[in-house]
Length: 417
Image (cartoon, rainbow, N blue to C red):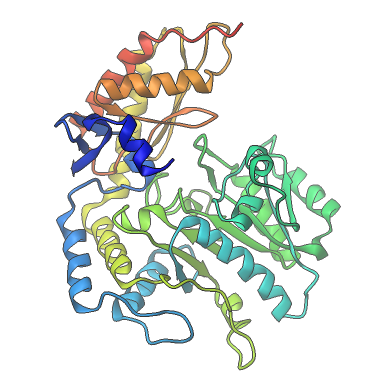
């Protein structure tokens, strides 16, 4: 929508002008508790002077260097790469920077296909994901996503992608047969979110272990898309740690800078790196702003904050508090279908008068009602979500659950004729 149209239809209450901690303030001076952390990326809240000062210092010293065609990097880029490999799952020792989560996924897909070409297996091109998954908006990332509506709206999609049904049991025994049917000699990579971002459901540990075993046995690269699930959101620094399964490639974004700048990263193993580290082969894919020094300074300050403030542990406590209080407050409410928490991702299932999942129209109305009461929430096609900054206080969490419970208790779902 053109900016002029937005301004024509908006008043001061539709413009956020300031952020303080877990709160946003609009141009009228009204405050709203941001229990959705932007879109999951403002993991440290607003007004972090440590991050802002790190960005400002870097901008004064060296605001930009080109990372394309073997230019010399800024020291902060190297420091951040080292910091990421220090905290990453085992074996992820190499880093390539980009600028968004979708760009990270796109880069990972190209990296996987190029890896097989470089190592003498050019027929391994197929990328396998799960139905209803989401991996970003660039075309290859969209094709890797299993969301049929996106494919219908923006297709035709590029060839070379396949989507398996989500696991129906906790054993992982069905996966090998599904991949065998596709032909492992054709498969370059399998891409998964260890915890599904749209509903907060972890993939079963056995399924992830089965995927790791099959990929290792058949020379398929396992990609974890942690653009959303990384950096403490799911109760561990990375969601891969829940199952203990390490991927060959991991995509990061969102929380990497706590939302203070646009940055993505792709972490890979030495084995993948070495397939490109030759006199005749390079990874010929880059954008002008990849590894931007100011964004890297924000990320480095963010990682230091995680270490000094024990934020991952606080996020687990926060998620448990939100879950338990919502269970208490909404017990017996007709629209309440249950609540679960994975780290600081709290999913609330709501139902209509017939017991069916609440419609998107009703979820939108719920969001608007919460906003009018000073609370910002998130919803997906699957569920309604509270995913607060990991720095949110217990008093703020109590305001969130009280406000949300009051709105849900008064909910009157639309009747569909």
